[in-house]
Image (tube, helix red, strand yellow):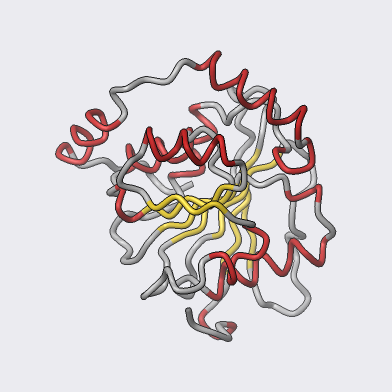
Length: 219
């Protein structure tokens, strides 16, 4: 896993932004309510824990130019980790389907770009919003609720919008990868983190990259 890096100036700014601390129990109640209403859309019944969010954010490098796409941010634990990692809010594009979560994200992270839309149709949802390749895509989507073909299409669409070699980061509670680790076509490579035991339930982070030779489109 890449080392965590924070500049003091960015850390101070991040602390200032996040000072309006959220109540974890309140966020868990929001997630649980959303799961009861739309179980296949929300997927998880609780937000990502701080250590899992930090692990996911660690794979995104603030020194790489371009926006960062976050898919399914929910109440914003990974968004917060990305800001603490050193990303300016203005670089973050949050794609969320739940309108209640969208309003919450806009209030908590007012300088991010919050897009209410279907993350699985990432090309269409972000059409016209990007003027340069992205530095990373961080996903908290419940991928196992979708057929493999749709998961692969999402991965390809995200890679089409990013720099060659940029990471598509996805966590899972499952023992198998959310997208196959081996790719016969060689269009992506996959690696995984150690198990994040401090998350409840324990989770693992998978990182998918597409080599430059496999780049087939630009945003």
